[in-house]
Image (cartoon, rainbow, N blue to C red; front, top):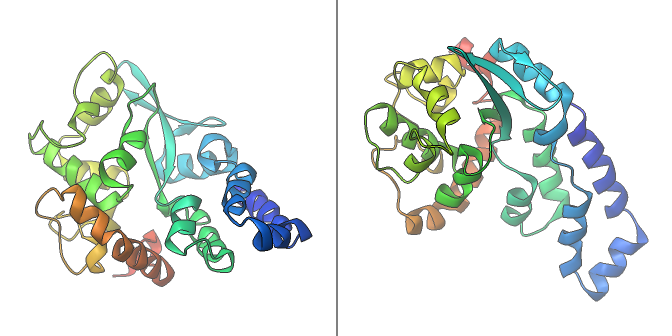
Length: 245
């Protein structure tokens, strides 16, 4: 993976510049805007990322997507990092020397990249933030409910067989159930032995049993980010770590 490394080089150059320190003294609100302008989304264009994901999931890969064959249909899959730069910056209140370390930690881990069907919006990728502030555990629980026959979850409009979402529907229907979905996409780190989704905001000590309200998601997002980072540092989401248990 290379794009995130190029981002870090640009971030560091900006952080070490006289202009950065001038903005700190005059109008610090512009600093985050500059970081955003310097950021290139690896999920959109990193060919090395897609090569590694393709090898991991045993799927064909192209420069900016994977290819999954579902019957006679070819489904393009795009990468989706568990936590983006802006979320980390917000979590650390724009403290660069803190968020840059975890940006590298997270972006460098192939097991923290998910894949979802790529087509015009709405998609699973775009709706994940809208409905769940990008909480991956909430999304996986939502998908679990879908596989159990619930068509009225917050995300269900992007799963159902409509003209806009036919691709996502066909891709999801290839899986017989939620356990098969978890196994094929190598997501065992996010569930317990019975395929119940682990609640990251509880440090994965509890499982999710109901769809969380927006209010609860907003009040627990700080804990979610805290434990997501701690668990990542411990290697809890690495496949090699899971295989040793």
